[in-house]
Each structure stands twice: as C-alpha cells, then as structure tokens.
Image 1 (tube, rainbow, N blue to C red):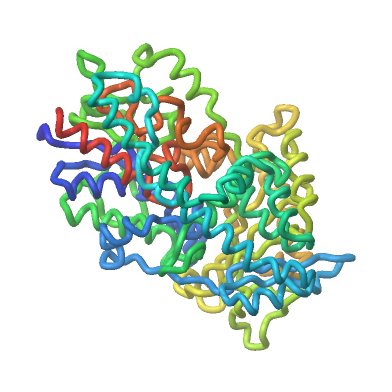
Image 2 (cartoon, helix red, strand yellow):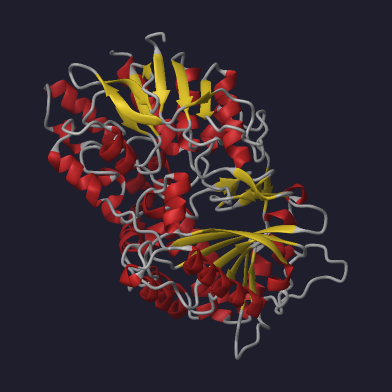
Length: 564
C-alpha cells in the first residue's frame, strides 16, 4: 500500500472522526472495524425482527458542534429528534406512583413542576442552571485540544520550552472565565454531587433526579467525592443550539456513525468491516469491504509503528496507527510484549474501568402506561414518553444503597433505571403500535460475589428484577414484552470492547482526567511507540458520543506526520 496511509485500528465513532479529518487533510486513510457494524458502541441493531435498537449508546448531545459543521454531518444524513421535556421522574410512594417530576426547557413550566415538592427549590433552579452553564462555558474549550504537557516545559531548547507554554492558554482562559467562581468550580469538580446539590435544593426527588447525571455509567455513589464532574460532563453538550439538550438519532445511534463514515468515505477513506460468512445484513450495515480483525501493531526496527498485522497474518503497512480501542486492549494486547516501559504498562493495567451498567433493550407491543401519568385513550405518545424516565430515583439514599450492594458483588435489589422510548419520537424504529425501550440500569458488578458467573440464569434473574420494578411504576409492562437483549458488564466488554463494560473506556474520575488520561505524561494522544496514537474514549476528554478524542488525536498525528 502507498506510504502515505494512516490506519485506524477500529471504527468506533472516534476512530471514524479521526479518519475523516486525516483523509480530509490529504492523508490516505484506511479504517479497520473488528465488528460487522461500524460505530463501536454507537450502532443500530435489529436484535428482535422489526425492532431497531440503539444497542449500547442511546442518546446524543456531546458530539462537538465543530465536528457536526466541519464534517457536514447533516448533509451526510444525520438527523436528531430533540426532546422537550427531557426528564420524567414518577414517584413510588406507599406502593403507589401518583406524583411525578417533569423537567423541560420551558423554565416556567419546570419551576411549576418543582414547586410541587419545594417552592424554595423552584426559585433556586434557574440560578442553579445558570451556575452550571457558566462552569461549562469556561471548561468547554479544554475539550477541543490536547492537554498541556508539563514535561515539555523543562525539556529541549529554551525556544521549544517557551512554545510549550502556549499550551497553558486554554487553562488560563478557563480560569479567567471563571473568575470569582473558580473556588465553586473546584468544589464541583472534587466534592460528592450530594454536597453540591444540598447547597442548592432541599427536595429529594429533584436532587435524586439531578444526581443521576453524576453517576450514570460510573461505579460511584452520589456520595462519592468527584462525582460532581460527571454531572458537568453530562450537561456539556448541546443540540440545535440548546445547551445541555439530549436527543434521539433518527434511525438509532448507528445514524451518527453512518454519517461520520459517509463523510470520511466522501473524502476517500477506505473502510473495512469484519468478515461475517452468511451475515444477513440486518442493522445499519452497508456493503463495505470485509477484513480480518487486527491481531497486533506492526513495529519497525527502531520500535516505531509501521502498520498492523491481521489475524490471518496479512500486514497492512502505514506511517501512523490510530487506535480507537481501549488503552488496555491497545497497549496490553496489541503491542508486542517487551516494547513498552514497565511503569507505563503498570499504569495502564491499573486504569480503573469498573462499570455498574447493565443495558437491557426491550421490544414491546404497546406504549408503557405509568400510574403517575396514564396513557391517552388513543395510545399515542405523551410528552413524558420522550423523556429519560427515572425509576427508583425518589431519593439519593436509594442510589447510594444500590451502589453499596454492587460494591459487595451483588446486583442492586432496587436498581437505578433510566428508561427511554426513542420510538415515541421516531416511529421508524418499531412496527406500528409497537415500541423499543432502552433500560440503562445500575448498579451491577462486573464480578459477582462468590465467583458466580454471569450465566443465563443470572442474566435473566437480574432482568426479571428490573422488569418487576418497571411494572410497579407502569403496570402491564411485563405483559407487553415481545423480546429482550440483556447486556451485563462482561457482555458489554465482549461485544463492544468496552473494558470492564465501562461506557467511557475508564472511570471519569479526577485522577483519570486531563493530564492523567489514560496515564500521566501520555495524555496528548501519543504513546511510547512512535507513530501509535490513542484516539478513543480512554483518551482526553473521555467518553460519550463526543468525537473530541478522534478530532484531537488526528490533529496531533497530522502535526507529527508532517515531520515523518
């Protein structure tokens, strides 16, 4: 193959973003996807015939607006259904689920909803939203550039060190933007989210609902120090100019990956997926050339990356290799042994990838009807059906108790459930009258107590428990189920390559962010292997369907490529 080729190891959305930018800049690029579907965790799959599931990732907000614009993703078919209202929390009180909390973008309506529980909280809520908005606006630019490399300040010629100091500018701008609020920002980043919310509010239903954004996908309790940052991470996005908004991708989350892949291909990127004999073609797959999975990174005589070796022994030569796989898979399995420093390997091995998540995809023959908000007589979706519906979220203590159970190796007896019904806005996902339901649940441990395996019995026992709780809020749900797909942490790891089942490729805790993601001194997408870069969620700024790691890594790789 020609010398000027960059190989992106796997085609999660970040890998596709990196490929698009590299090819757009004139560097011939090939993408190798280990599955039959493009997009990593951002895929659409037809698990039950006639029902299209966003099998892993299920909502869009964090995708960087620059990527949407620069890659012309709308032209390449990306459509998103914005949600308003966006959050619905029914209350299960004394065995009944009568009251509920509905949050949306109309502040007056939202305040009226909050006032059911506390008039004081209703008055405080706009100020809280404005406070978070200021913090996010100050931190937002840090997402779009490689972290500062402190080692560069003390190495090399004086002029080179002075140039390295320019990297401090985004940090300095963030500090200046925060001004007097810098101490409050520091507290949000380091404190338990319950402490932050207690400063603002008194009603538990509101605090628990807001706390879900701080613990979603994290093996952490609302009482865990640093959980406030994950809260910010989940309000950093925007949709159609609406800050903090989340929406459903038309056709499922595979629509994001397909649009990015289309943009990359339009510039000339070669894209290859896994060979699947007799693959029936369901899901979002298009007719793409097939290939074997990557077995290892190919190294040159000086230890530099020169491409990859496929499982059948085929060598794919390239000047650069960008891996969208996790840091653990990339450095502990794909790089030949003896090529990386021991300290680096030790830090990668110790990277916290614990996950509490079990995702359950459900096909139902009717719309769930909640006791707190019964369905209309015609069965059509009501405003709350488009929301993230929070179950078992009446109180932050419930969330903490669920976390404690999983920490001891047992699935939560009263799990936190985020229920979404994307077909409420996108009827193309299911047959007429039917719906697809996403149950994003926690807490479930990766390893069960006593060494029990996550076998079929354990899978079904936990899913049945989740369904029992949904039934308590929405009677008739269990009878409506046509089929289900249960993805425990080990299943998420096996199918999607998510280490430990972690949707972020690793905990979004302060000790694993910015300078230290994935390890200190290698947070700028480069690795100890020249020409090998990490462009997935294990790199700065972390997880979510954001695209920033791919865009940033491509920028760094392009700078290096010019000097090859």
